[in-house]
Each structure stands twice: as C-alpha cells, then as structure tokens.
Image (cartoon, rainbow, N blue to C red; front, side, top):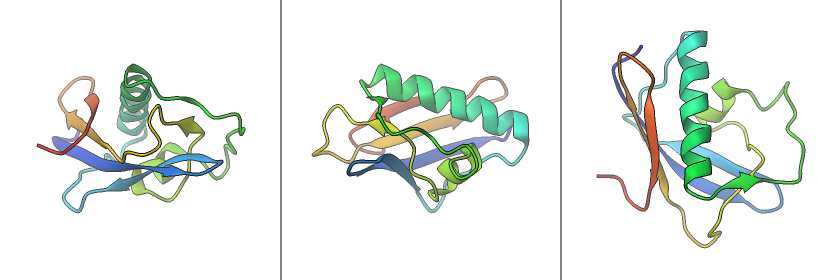
Length: 106
C-alpha cells in the first residue's frame, strides 16, 4: 500500500452528485488493488458521514475510481448538508486505508 495521505475537498455538483478536489500534496495510489481499497474506504467514510446515493445512475465508462481520485469525475452521492464543503481525509497504511469526512483538514 502506498504510504502517505489522500486529502480532498468534497464539492457538491448540483443535480449530479459530488466530486473530489484533491489537495496538492495528496498521494493517490496507482496500483489497481490499492485504488479499489481506497475507493471502498471512501465509500464507507461517505456513508458514515450521512452521504446517500443520488438518483442519477453512474456511467461506469466515465466515472471510474481513478477519475474520482483525480477530481475528473462526478459521482452520484448526495451530501447531507449541501451548504458545506467538507474534506475527505484518508491515511494510506500498510493495510486497509482509513478515511473520514471532516469539516477542516488538520
């Protein structure tokens, strides 16, 4: 697993879902297994923070995990509080990455 931290601001895209705006110093894994593990950790963190799936269906050819991590794709998740722009903070460890949604980056 890639060491480091993945940090991104969560941005609401009206009527479509959310996209991530990675911080400059964010580390995104490049190995498929690591990308998938980070994607699962992100989904768990979003669910724990009250995010729900948007009614719009995901386009699997355009909305890939790689595109989500780089901020190129909007994913069908709806924020519980559309007026805020919280951050997704993930620690990339030697096992499963751990992610949480925070109001600010520490």
